[in-house]
Length: 200
Image 1 (spheres, rainbow, N blue to C red):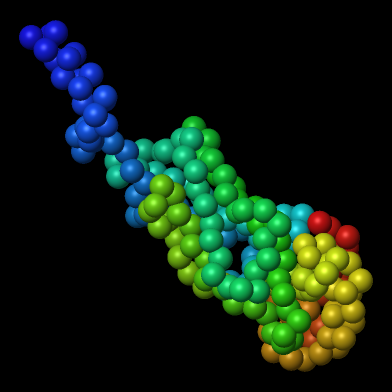
Image 2 (image 1 turned 60 degrees about the vertical axis):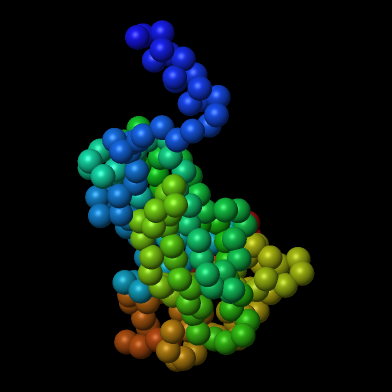
């Protein structure tokens, strides 16, 4: 009987037949957890080519609420104005955890407002998180020689927005404590922009 069993297994493997796997672990969107870290405010993320802005903190668990280690987690942005320097992805550790840093910038040349993009976090084809976010970046220009680097063209955009009161300005990096009690682009925003100077 044992010999027949081994022969059967060999045939299944050789033919590539599906093996019953009802007990196999699969990512579970309800048990897993995805959180934004270092947001500018509740609706706005800041990204930088150096990856030192907002990021996604992910814990992947299966249908049994057990952590899934060694699985690939990927983030997709559907906004055409999001320019990634590298894919936003990573493998979980033994505890099912991975921090996904966003290396990139935005094309903010069309209008002074922030850009909006859908954000989807997936693991093994299962959606763990999906929502829209507004995105700011000190890397606001993606022209020739300026893509994914904070340099002179970005500074010229910021300088053009200086003292602007436009709601949701692309250069208003300090949303939680705005000068003059409003949306003014001022010194606090410049100090944030300056910390990312020449990042790539």
